[in-house]
Image (cartoon, rainbow, N blue to C red; front, side, top):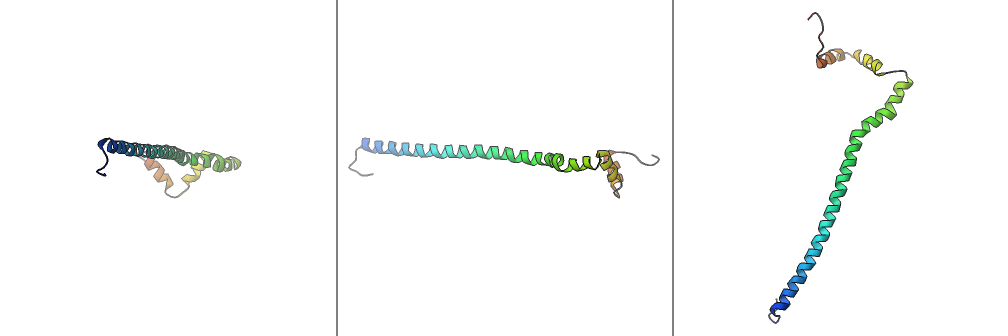
Length: 101
């Protein structure tokens, strides 16, 4: 600061600099808030897609083939029972007992 300025002029300059910094800070905060809001909604949409995609794929792609072939879930499940080792795995998971126990 130059020595030829009096105290009032120095304070005035400091207050103007403070006002400029406050305006700049406010603009940065608004930008950050806008980015945060966009990020939140994009995450919500992304998770809805991740959770909903399997249901959409089944309903529009897989289910028509089951109905056109005359299959149902029971037919599909009985087909799974023919896979080697699946029956034992399914019984172990469901807690079913086999044999003469």
